[in-house]
Length: 181
Image (cartoon, rainbow, N blue to C red):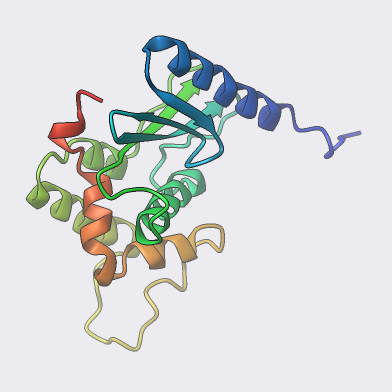
């Protein structure tokens, strides 16, 4: 009989956050490190913030698959944190995956990872829209999001809203000035 109250993978994920926080804490002097304050793990050093989502993979789930709920929820959270001022717009955002097997990023995630300029980030976002929604129909009455899974539809709608394109592109594009993080 399956016991749905046991969540060893969630406990492992949380303990991984604590271990990662401790690693960050002992890595360098004069930094403030937190768990579940600004993000899963956050490092504040010299006026800069590094916000990290730490994901543990112990099953067949892939948090960097094209339609991963975890991935889209992370981007959504970062976007809302920046919009509401919880994270500064110049924060370094990291998606840290610890896995007991090899996982392969989806083509959207690969394109996001390789976007190093504003133009590349805009192209990556446009490509993600086409990949997830298909081609844009001429009939604006068609709900492009209707066929998406309920699990991530709202995240996609929020992130693909053109009014947020600048923030989403800032999340996609690794800031070269912050790459030394």
